[in-house]
Image (cartoon, rainbow, N blue to C red; front, side, top):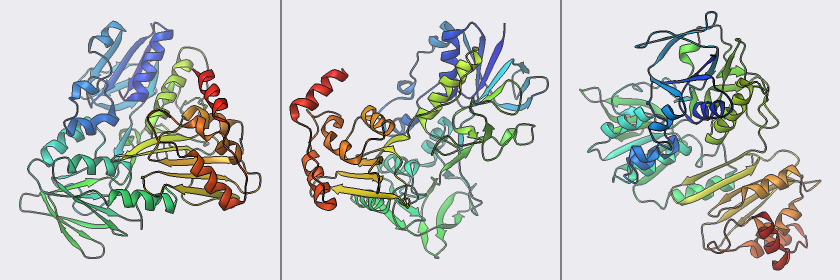
Length: 446
């Protein structure tokens, strides 16, 4: 019986295992040094904040794996011999594979800061990071976070929930300014400033982490010479593929493991998926590294088809993502770059009282809709997917914006104000579709 071995039990690896089992009787083994059972990585913060127990973020009962004949090994893979198709582990006898799926995920970035390995300095990615954060933050009063992205926001919310004052060191002049347009970044920045106990220091970078006599952090120094007392330093300057143990092998690696459209590598019967996979040729306007939850799931489904004999390439549709900046919801559909492309225009609408903002991007000549950032409300993914695929105009999107309201019964409707502002700014005469028409469209979708 052919043996499929998967290194990594995150969403990518577990999705691959589940779909291989659905379509075959192959022997399947998942190896992870992080935890025995799969858990929702994005929910780790809620365990720390006391909203959930760790067992609550495990989507499957422990008996699920035996019932579905998926073997689990909790161990670290020390070496992969691609010629003999053998894995060498730290505590477990060597394992032979027929097909190998590398789903090793990411690790928190470190950039050679002086003192970055002292006690009390860490990132947040794994279950072990969560356990370490429990230890490192017990009884402390001040923390410093390095970097201003989504991981940093999560760590800040976690720390503030325990009455720990947080100082952000942010290299850009606004929050997440390398990913968001300036107007959106300013909007998020103003929201964050409303939270008691959170201090934002912009255009500041870490120079050195200074320890006490026990080699635990006691303060940091910025490149501008500012000294900030703290007992915890959170590294939130992004993540990078977790591939260090493979770098001396024959596997072709750049930042991540280089893969072809079908997620195969340069080694026979070896595939890479999820955060550790880097496409040799980026797909459409997507980045070569896609380190978000849903892309890992999609890659797992895709590689499973190939493993069971249905050769398939990874074909993601339009880019989307969602997150929260504390209680401010954020969604993005299509591409809204931090800087407009030469042929692009944008239309930004903000509510004058509520924390709601929309940033539409479209082609300035053809008026083709290119993407949207939304803050403070939810819009329907499937409709924006449809509009992007059909290359709908910005006028068509705005005309039918009411259909995209995720839940009109419970969310305020701002569509008329949005359309009126667009017409005023661009000299257009867009009108919202009749109420009866958009309700019919909503019913047709059910």
